[in-house]
Image (tube, rainbow, N blue to C red; front, top):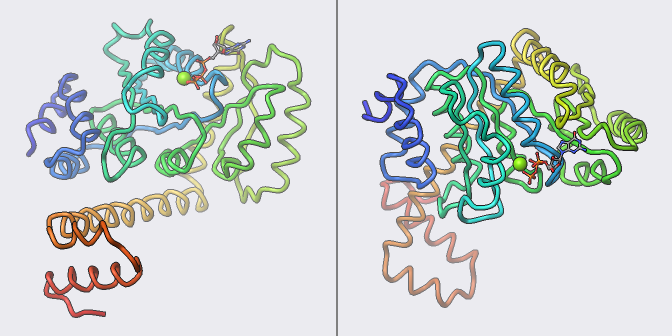
Length: 315
Ligand SMILES: Nc1nc2c(ncn2[C@@H]2O[C@H](COP(=O)(O)OP(=O)(O)OP(=O)(O)O)[C@@H](O)[C@H]2O)c(=O)[nH]1
Ligand SMILES: [Mg+2]
């Protein structure tokens, strides 16, 4: 067993942080570590919190942590920052907003930022969630700014996706365009102390008519995170959705689809790495990359080369 996995089993918090770095840096021992982690007990409930910049996601997470700690539940938070190559602004902001929890051993907070990993930020975030799960947290919360494909991708691994909107921000159209509407399991209207809540609600309901929500109809929760209002309702709706996932056929099917997607994704990543190494380790191929005339031809030729190298028949 990987030593870090063993230490995580023994609830060594430094090993937890180290393991996430292994994942984030795409270290050579990553897959070994992760498969050891996968064989450990995984039972956490995963919540994704997404929404426009400044919608109040971190403030909400901070309140949620407090709410969950009051019920004696332990919480890991992963804050994803897709914009910066270093754990810069987001980290400082989140540290500041969640800073009251730093001395609580039942709370773990970590920021993830883009590194050069081939798997990308979404992959390493999902792996980090699993590492936190194996450590034994009851709830793992992922905060992302809902801007791109990578966020949509991260949300494929969580149980419940909460989309945070604010009144009078034009958010609804934005998230509709970004394809986030389809993945929302519940909507949070945060900053409900501001004007325009009713209008936003009407807009949301209109959009919800268009989206085929099958047997789960995403509820709308109003919160004022600065005043700690609506947090209990938010948690209630999360729990209702969790029950739906685990207890209904549609829910079970959705979970299974997510896991299937992940298997395919892991295979795609592993194969891609293999092919990438095969190409970049070959001096002739590296030179050829500088003078490409026909990308289709080159791709076909190299794939055939690679298959031959693995003793497989060319197709
Ligand atoms: N009026 C009002 N302001 C709020 C509320 N919740 C958060 N804010 C303020 O909104 C600002 C942004 O809050 P954050 O929690 O950092 O928002 P965020 O979505 O995490 O922001 P990013 O991570 O930068 O995308 C802060 O100044 C908060 O004090 C609320 O319910 N009402
Ligand atoms: Mg934030």
